[in-house]
Every structure is written in structure tokens, then in C-alpha cells.
Image 1 (tube, rainbow, N blue to C red):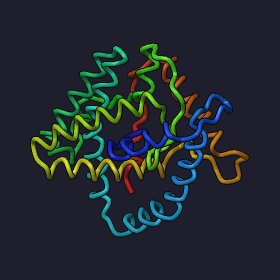
Image 2: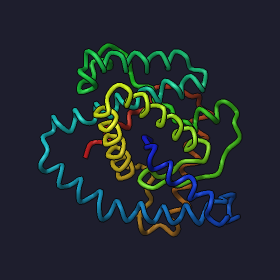
Image 3: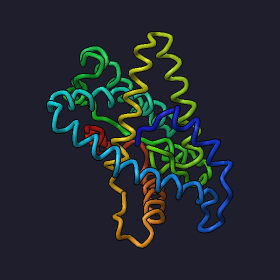
Image 4: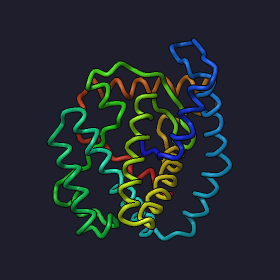
Length: 237
């Protein structure tokens, strides 16, 4: 799941300022439910219509290239999370993918690394923290991002702040492009989230919360760093 620093910087203070709800070990439930409802409205009235318009007007090759660029920009995240979880080999794979696709792949437009046997290794911050034995933090729903938790959101804030700062030292255009790609990909990921419950569910929020917790726990128990099905295709409009 790819998320952005500006969204986190605004959402985290609001989450901690929200009144606490004690039900089901979810102290941020009131804030979370409001963000869950906001995300649903964004998907229904902004993201879905815009995605449909772009899909009908944008060539497939352009959409694939955009998805590849996004995937390449997220590789540094997986270098960090794989190192956190002790999977140095997978961190090396992520580093190799980033180096090859950034050069031979023309800034990530193409993905030659996969053809060379360097299969993408996705590990989220929540999974790596669980593997490290860090106690579970409260569930948190972020605008335009969706399910997360407090520790993961805090780490992502710091990670993307550093990433954006480093890119801005190289080129303000590059930093701005990274920000636009992150925002677009976050919206697309939210739209295509596999754990989005249907509107007929008795309590869609509670279902999504339970599925996110199960996902993190399963990733922790199964071992971090195994090659997972890539979720990058979901970022294409």
C-alpha cells in the first residue's frame, strides 16, 4: 500500500486530536470512521469518474509506463522495510531493481529488472515492525490512503519527508513529479483496494479494520520478504 507525506502530515495530528473511542481496541475510531466515509465519497465521486475518463483517453502503453514509474519510485521503501525485517537479500533485490530500472529502464519507464530475475519484494512498514517485535499500534485510516496504523504512518511520514528532501536537492521538478505520482498512486490504490467491503455489509468499516489486522498478522507470521503478488497494476487508472 503506497502513501504520501503531505497527507500523513495533516492526518496524524488530526487523528490524535480526535476523541477516543474505546470499542474493540480502536481508540481512534471516531476519526477513523470519518476518514473511511471521506475515502468512500472520494472513490465514488472523484477517483472513479476521473479514472474512467483517463482510461478511455489514455493509451495502454502510457498507463503501463506510468505504473512502472510508480513501482520504481516505491523500491526504496522496500529496501528499508526489508532491512527492518532482517531480509538483507530481499533488500538487495529491491536495491538492484531500483538501480537497473532507474538506468537501463529509463527512469523507471520500463522494468528490465524483472526480466533479469529480480522479482519485486513488497514488505509494508506494518509487517516489518511486527517482525521486529514492535507492539501493535492503534489502527488508523488515512485520507486517500486507507488502512494503516500509527507506527507505520509515522515511519512513512519520516521516510517520504527524507525522500522528498533528497529529490529536491537534485531537482525541484523531480521532487514535484514524485509528489504528483505518489498522490495519484495513493488514490488509485485506494480505489482498487482488495479489502474494500461492499455497501451491503453490516459494518463496512469494522470489516476493513479486521481484514487489515489479519493481513498484517499473516505477513508477520508467514515471514517477511517472500515474493508477493505485485500490487502495482492497481495503480494504473
